[in-house]
Length: 362
Ligand code: SAM
Ligand code: SF4
Image 1 (cartoon, rainbow, N blue to C red):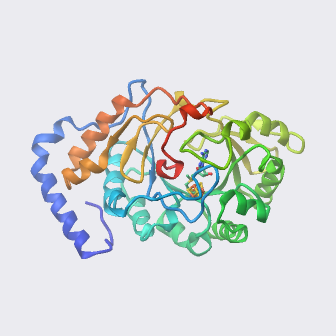
Image 2: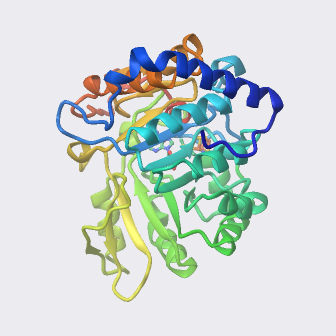
Image 3: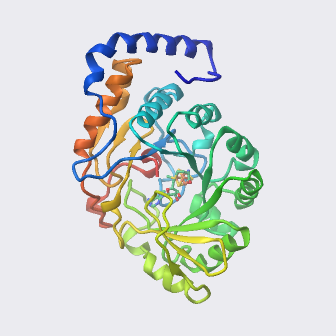
């Protein structure tokens, strides 16, 4: 078993127990353990997004309410459980893992988890999505831990507006975090901007200009109806990717590409410039037919689709069958049968999903 530098002696003991339990179970269960993950529609699942915590130091208006209540700790997967899930997925052919949240960098000992996942055989890419608040002090450690690329959320370059959108965020701190990420030498840094009409849509040109000057990529995201938010009406603030592209055409020549980073973004290039401009458009350009990913919620629910509730409770399995790797892989394999064909996002209130993005692992 590949397991370097566990944080506690208890953990080492636990893993040794797991290993012997797994040996006991091997004869009865390995015969039917799947080797790759494929759903009913022939799509291969090669990408896992893990929400490592539902907690966050921001309260972005499109993600949660100001009075958001977080899960009791016992309901959230432990770092060891997260590692076991990551290991099982890589053994089932997953080559890319993203840690997200909530804010992944506020989870205690997250560097330990990153280091352990980074060395799992078969994993090609370990990446992270963060709001940037902790990057100033953590960027170098993340790079050393084996994180290849980092996505940083940035919805505004105006201090007051940034605070209003995030409710708690400090723009200067996030900009210092972006700087630290550039210095740390990640293979790629990308900004993510959720654009809302009349809130920050007038900044799309400035945001791309900032990305170009910083030498990073940028993706614009259409707001999704995940979790109830009370600060605005999503139907009213909807701003389409097509509209953003029209706005950008005032200053930038955007050429479509077939490039992909393994996610849902459609990328455009500006001639002579390294920056790529991406669009994640769940409403206007549905990307489900090429879906290669599943998500693990902070409480260990394996979600087969961002916009549907089809799921398998892996926390229950992990805790009922401690250390039984074959059983865990069996459950993951079975879950492929319920991966839906696609999401049915609709911005009208009636169809809003109760689950917030911070739980889901956006
Ligand atoms: N806290 C980290 C961050 O903000 O980057 C990681 C988690 S956050 C849930 C991941 C991404 O989801 C962010 O880029 C955020 O802007 C985006 N997001 C959150 N709520 C969203 C929503 N309702 N619709 C679309 N994107 C959303
Ligand atoms: Fe926190 Fe990210 Fe949600 Fe903002 S989008 S509240 S930073 S989890």
